[in-house]
Amino acid sequence: MDCADLQQALAAARNFSPQGADLGVSEIGVGNINDTFLVTGQGQTPFILQRLNRQAFSAPELICQNLDLLSRHLPAERIATLVPERRWAIPHLLASRQHTLWWCDSNQDFWRALSYIGDTITLPCLNSHAEAMEVGRALAIFHNLVREIAPDSLHVTIPHFHETPHYFQLYQEALAANPYGQPPAPMVACHDFISDHQDFITTLEDARARGELQVTTIHGDPKLANILFDASTHGACALIDLDTVGPGLLLYDLGDCLRSCCNPGGSSHELSLSRFDIDLCLAILQGYLEKGRHLLSRGDRKYLLTAIRLIPLELGLRFFTDYLTGCHYFKTACPEDTLQRATAQFRLVASIEEQLPSLEVKLNALLGIIDSTGE
Ligand code: GN1
Ligand code: MG
Image 1 (cartoon, rainbow, N blue to C red):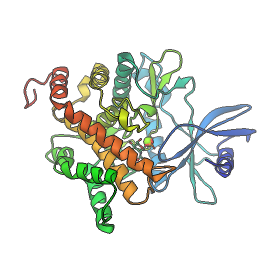
Image 2 (image 1 turned 180 degrees about the vertical axis):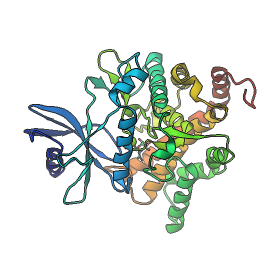
Image 3 (image 1 turned 90 degrees about the horizontal axis):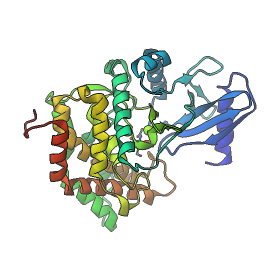
Image 4 (image 1 turned 180 degrees about the horizontal axis):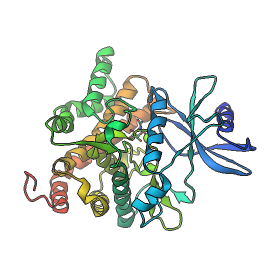
């Protein structure tokens, strides 16, 4: 982020500051897609400012409309009624001085402002059973809140998001456009891994097509960095980054949360750390079941293990295809990082697969599945 970006952010911030106060902006968060800033100033309630990435979100106004709908359904008072036992918040849009929900600058960059949820921390990785259970509770609380919102009342902000066969198709198109000759070893390993999993890629979408899994309202990106914890109590108190909230399978969220939280490598993409921690997974699910047992259908239980394996495979495929096509989607300082991220996700899948029999037994015990046909 250079000085020009900060100047641009400052100019955008002024459009969302009613007082036109003397503002300061600083970059916050570690997102792969959008640019996020914290705006502060004398007499100004701090707020979040984001420049949405038009490469990922071709119609960013749809995101703002979704957020607006979310706030109408779930104002703070309603959240307090539905989650009386703890502090909980959902970020809401702040209107611009022109009373619009977003503001575009002369570069056609798309800016929007959100309420800032203060006195919170994020966790770089999970260090205890208690933290893991809190993650599970947080996801279930979020699912309980948004299940009041009909999935088809929300816009799809990224078409085919989390439909793994779609990403496989993009990968094949990338291959067809550029045959790559004899690629270096890390690329060969990625190609081989994908090819070995070709049949597995359609499993969730096939189950959905057969009517075994139902579409509901989901978060879309419930990774660890998107969960806020109260700074004093360390209780989870918000799920942020609502750009991909929309229709989807509950299992997309569970798979994504588990791939992010159960990898002790966290977001470092350090290959030697990339593995799947079953104990963390079980603790997260225990927390989820505590608040959301009723949310899981028979199909969700049956395909949970599939989702745990598939969502990191999908993310690896997304990173790898982005690498093959020039790294235009995920922010990166160096293309080799994107390749490394792909490799880290494939290692995570391999680690899940190495532990599959034990994971299956433990999951079935936790979910109360008696035999392979499901209870
Ligand atoms: C992206 O922008 P960020 O970091 O919240 C991506 C997610 C990935 C994640 C991997 C819209 O999320 O799907 O899981 O990177 N978001 C989008 O870290 O593609
Ligand atoms: Mg995100």
